[in-house]
Amino acid sequence: MLSRLAMRFLACAPLLAAILVAAPSASAKDALKRVGVTGGFAGLAGNEGDFSGYGGGILGSYGLSDAWSLAGSAFITSNQVTKTGGRSRVTSQALGFVYALDVIEFVPYFGVYAGLYEIAGGGVTKADIKLGGQLAIGLDYIVSRDLIIGLDLRAHALPADFAKSPDNPSPFYATTFLKAEYAWGWF
Image: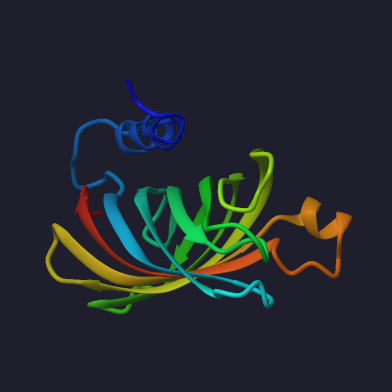
């Protein structure tokens, strides 16, 4: 039987599947669809001790135009969230919009996401699901019409936690992930 963590992480699969199959079969007028994996480093703001963490996830997007995309992501990271206790697990599932500046092979982009976060384990006494947001900026390199690799930088924020305790920096963290995506349905 799957663990609670695996069940939550897999819960985003229907969201990504819906994004990817929302359009009819590929033709010249269909939007670009992408699905991929990502992994790298995650860091918390503040002085909790061990600043660096690691993580990864899955990505998916559906092109609304040649510049705008509807995108979904599911990440899991491991960080030292509290001063005592071991590493905590931070999971997130987010949906947002991405704007890409198409410049031949190199494609810079930025995005805004809203999603659900769960922080559990380590020094966290009670797992809780929270609303959060992400600001993304990155650079994709189009290797071929099927393969895209890139760098994805995201700032994550949990506004309700910040409102409860403005002097606590833990509601903010950043991820720096390398990614590889399969693409189809070019304009």
